[in-house]
Length: 258
Image: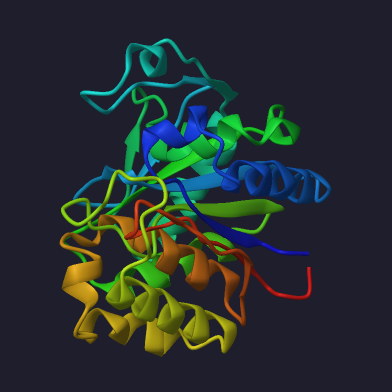
């Protein structure tokens, strides 16, 4: 069974588009549901904090943390069950490992979480536990955060949501835009490291000459590292694709044998 997954959530417009990644998300949700997870630990690029923070609520709604999009996006709704007791136990587990932990009892789900989850109806009854990323922390920190999440056990699945390449300054809004060479090369290097289970390589990919082109800020990269840390072994791409020329839509799972 896979215990960790990563999805690239793309633009909020993905949820009303015809992009083929939506079929991938539906299939991924069905795959996860077969494992009957006790909870889905969702690590979104759009929740950034100083210290790891866990969402502890009995119910989550979607909130629209984006601006300037068509009105129909702001009419979309999404609801998810929470798992307060499990979330609190997770917080205690992480604190016992030495991580500084905070709890948030008010925050709903940002679009990094609800955009892909909305296309995973098979998981509609699975409780969600949101966990934040820390952009000011290192890649190694996020690999270790993933390892600690995996150590919690209890049949909880880790789902990272971000992007392997995420530079909004370089995107081409033409849906047929060709993929930029530098973006493809960076995404291919990440895939190679994931396929070989090279977590040290993923950590040091931040030193790649194109890293700051791929990620002017690292928050969309870090959910992938959390998922890789939680997976703890070789991973595999279940989907590879692009939007707008420089926005990856790749999905991964760990381990590959699932």
